[in-house]
Amino acid sequence: MLYAILCYDSEAAVGSWTKEQDAAAIAKLDVVQEKLTREGRLGPVVRLMPTTAATTLRKGKDTIVLDGPFAETKEALLGFFIVDCASLDQAVETAKDLGRASSSSGSYEIRPLRLFRPGSLAT
Amino acid sequence: MSAIAWIDAALRGARPQAMAALLRNFRDLDLAEEAFQEACLRALKNWPAQGPPRDPAAWLIFVGRNAALDGVRRRRSERALPPEEVLSNLEDAESSLVEELDDATYRDDILRLLFVCCSPELPATQQIALALRIVCGLSVTQIARAFLVGESAIEQRITRAKSRVAGAEVPFEPPGAVERAERLAAVATVIYLMFNEGYSATGGTAHVRASLCEEAIRLSRLLVRLFPGEPEILGLMALLLLQHSRTSARLDSDGAIVLLEDQSRELWDRDLIAEGTALLDKAVRHRRPGTYQVQAAIAAIHSRAARAGDTDWAEIEALYAALERLDPSPVVTLNRAVAVSKVRGAEAALEMVEALAKDLSGYFYFFGVRGALLLQLGRGDEARVAFDRALALANSAAEAAHIRTQIDRLMKSSH
Image (cartoon, rainbow over all chains, first blue to last red; front, side):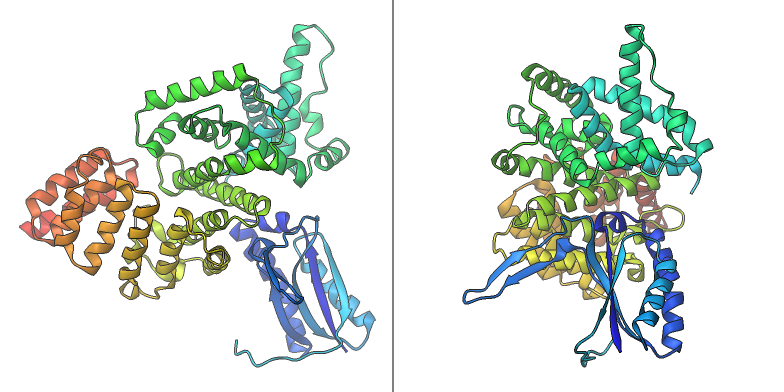
């Protein structure tokens, strides 16, 4: 089963890292991702830009395009991993592995995928 | 990073938050500044031994507030508060403090301070000088340079502004939506000038200058959150990110200035460029152009060129022309002249530059550009005169060194 591990954390805290701190944090997570890749379990990995770069389209008869929404709450969605796991237990273990390698606080939300299309983007 | 460099960066980074909170507490600029200074002195004493506190701003606010209150109490011969040595390790005292001073409070504090400084009772020049001094902690020399005026004039502006703020008892409350919008342009200017000071390398270490730029970016991000539909604020943040993306390419390993066309573009920060470009795209959608958006668009054109030779100078010239219409100034015309030299040659550019001689007679960059154009036209003797003048006006060792390199090149080619 495919799971999304959604990363929530304080945008302000993560955004205040220096370039070096940011690179170090990413490097630590890379180690876990390399392991998952070797096991053939890692799908797409996404890191989002801060919510200040976000635009919202309100659907409806007349669509409205808005700037934002900006994270007003302490935690915002910062990115996600797609991981193949045999069970929820394994998904939780994988999230724990990532959590141990993570340099921030916040939380991971583990959500099973209902539909997954890998798409055709060349990366 | 050495302990002192780290503390220096932390103090600078925490300054706006700490000053704002202290000001809210004491409602007196001088008292707040004194409290902040005192807290900084104590930080320098305590942090190297005890390690950095989890939240430097909260520490400075707490200690600054206590130091000032302590002074008052001592004068009243009351019992002193516990010493801050006890406080820096502290889980309990600090965690409640951190909660108390959560992001929302910080944001309002900084805004309050920026917006108090930009109060309409003060003339625009005083507002901005005061904010640069109080919020950003720039020196009078640095502010004078930003305004292209003398130091005594700035000193006077700040003194007058302070006494007017004190005398008028300007309320230190968060201004309402209307007042905020009215003062937004001045606040944006402060952030822009703060970034420029960090970027243009007068005085201080490279490290300190980078932290000024980062603080300006952080403040611009707060402004974007508070004014989500304001394209110029998006444009400002885009501009700062795009400029900042080139930081590590702008000086070589000896600290010498590397001109844009000679910079190694692999050193440009692609993440900052991507975010800056995304913000500019958002801004432009509003179809309400402004000076920050145009400047960001110019920076974005440079970012897009894989090699210096790929730069779309015609588009840059058009954008500078747009900037001249939006906000005419001799400095903008000087920049357009640089673009013109790339599109139509040095002669056309020099003609534009000569017309600016009176307005920019004290401006380092003017003589640098003039010298370079004269050099291109093979007028070495005149170029030498311009470079000598630039050398006399250089604001930093790096600027002076850059001009000296030009002169050396000139001397070699003439022999």
